[in-house]
Image (cartoon, rainbow, N blue to C red; front, side, top):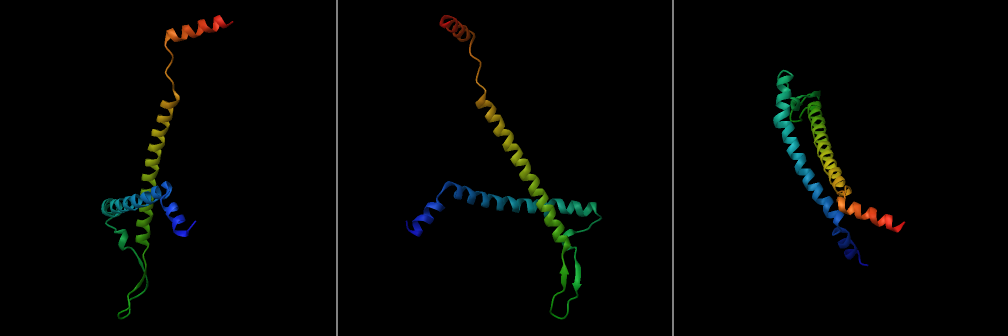
Length: 132
């Protein structure tokens, strides 16, 4: 089997295409959550913490000299990234929990069979008695 044909078979498998779609949707979801955090949650957090803007919080390790920029440790961006992660993880947890609940409900519907009608039960009992 040629290399190109083998690659084509790999790339066209359903799992690879599903994974690619998941990555694209995940990236878009990440942008939405990042916007939620930076544009909605962080300003509120700033008000609650006395007007502190996390994204501008840093420690200057070395002052700017001439045209060389200052070297800073941007811990505010790190705090914001942690909050992004926690919100994304929570949103994914809620989505997976909802999907599992729906899946369990579907399995219950499939596994539960309707009770047979009274006449069917009676006929079954009569048949079993006649066999004896």
